[in-house]
Length: 104
Image (cartoon, rainbow, N blue to C red):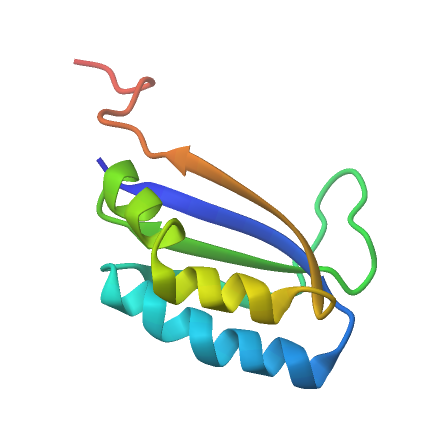
């Protein structure tokens, strides 16, 4: 089942954030990830969202592949480059195997 990386981030240093993206993006592709949402400011329908915080959602084939990417040497290099450039929250979530609301 598909697994997702969901990120809420704020850029602290645009130049260094670009360097992070140049490392992170190829690592995501190498581990079969694909962007569903990339660096957009969401439209808030309810509640609050910190100003200028962006959202990124990446889909991987499954949680094992996602974790393989996250623990990879390629992405570890990106994490080092990100320090002090981007402040973020990152969560992993598995997709549904079936629609729980579906009626048979």
